[in-house]
Image 1 (cartoon, helix red, strand yellow):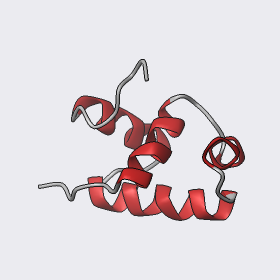
Image 2 (tube, one colour):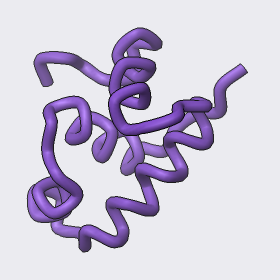
Image 3 (cartoon, helix red, strand yellow):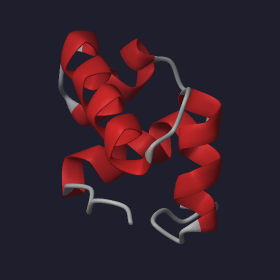
Image 4 (tube, one colour):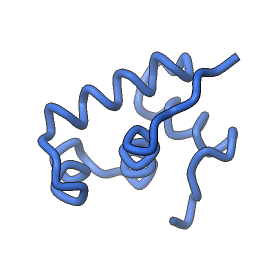
Length: 69
């Protein structure tokens, strides 16, 4: 069972899936790269992902993010 991601975590994971860096995600969302990293770590823990790539793939497979969005 996976834990539900927050709206901000979903936004960050979508950025990860688009291949953006933490700095790039932070710039687009108006938050710091450190805050982005925190959201990535939390999202990985909630989904049980080992790394950023697996996080993005799992989020797509679970339908949590729009691959075109």
